[in-house]
Length: 219
Image (cartoon, rainbow, N blue to C red; front, side, top):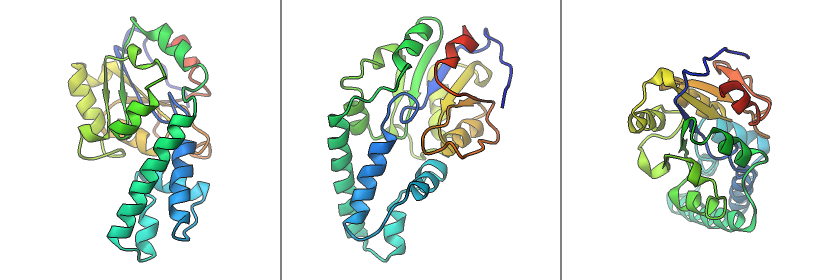
């Protein structure tokens, strides 16, 4: 889908983090899959994409369906979080082209990160990324009550930026992220990720093949 946009219109870009700036979603899938496997529950790529990236729910809903207690689910979630932390610390995470794109935009368009990641994971992700210097502010999961696909995170970012909605562009990779951006009344471009390539992203203002397209369209 293509949608013309004035190069002078966009004053702020709100970036999703996972799957857009950093290669973390596969590690999150692995940690969730291993956690559920401990109680004999399989987790397919399609289930992960539908539950987590499309609907914005927890994959541990599968454990509830299987009758596991809240205590057991809490223990699995804690184990998942620790395993995810281990995986994040083992890998280089910025996606190809991200540093170059952010560097090209920096100083010309204000930028922020709006993520559903816990702050503890976000801090680990960016401990070695050298990306945060490009951003005016970052919002993590603890900064708002309702996660994507609810609009709250983007409405809070809009308030913090001091901009009007028509001057803000959101970059997302998931259906729930797109839904959150549009619910907040924002323009949203989507870069489909490995787990969302089959989505049609109805309602997106533009669908991109790669992050490298963004400076060419805005500068």
